[in-house]
Length: 284
View 1 (tube, rainbow, N blue to C red):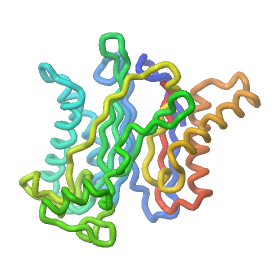
View 2: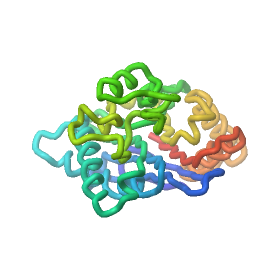
View 3: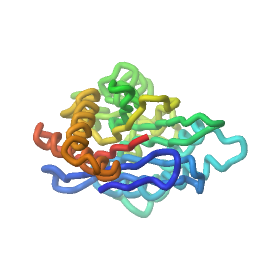
View 4: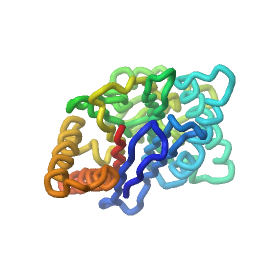
């Protein structure tokens, strides 16, 4: 599917998804145009659940509202607002876990891109937990907006934090259970004292100024990134766009975004991904 934006933050977004070989679809995503009623702001969220749909549904429903709540506070700054919103959403999920055992045992990775204009400069603030990823196509080159570690438990810095919190990494997993060291949910691996939580709910946040040549972003779950690297994904989109322009020169950008997002999903399936696959292609 595709959507032409009514705001000035992005041009359009195309999306596609496939359950793959998994028994259940545990991905979720959100696109909010004119975020908070602002014509030059948009919210993009990609969420990848594990252990059930409860956590991913909670985050998909509540995180963007919490981000907006934080942004509307006096003297709010986007980076701090995103961090506070992530932590608060996860804390609220834990409270909800008293009612739903599924929320307590399930989890979700997340990648959020907040696009907004500040004093005439358009910026992308990216916050993430785990291996959901955002990649910017900058003049034909892939530029990752999320951390290179993907918050894998095997990353030296992430493993160090887990050990300092009193845990261990076994078989490339936190406590031998979870391949990523930051996520929403997974409250069986968290503690009331944040520094003692083996799995963190504190996101990494980056800020990137949008410059000439920044054509699109690919925001996707690990069902894509496990089998296609950043540059290859960008190349596939660029090649797809060129082919579409030749064959269907009058095709609008909304339809193009829909087709290239579906193309990435299909390519991931051809390359043997065994996971759910969800892809958003956001044109800037």
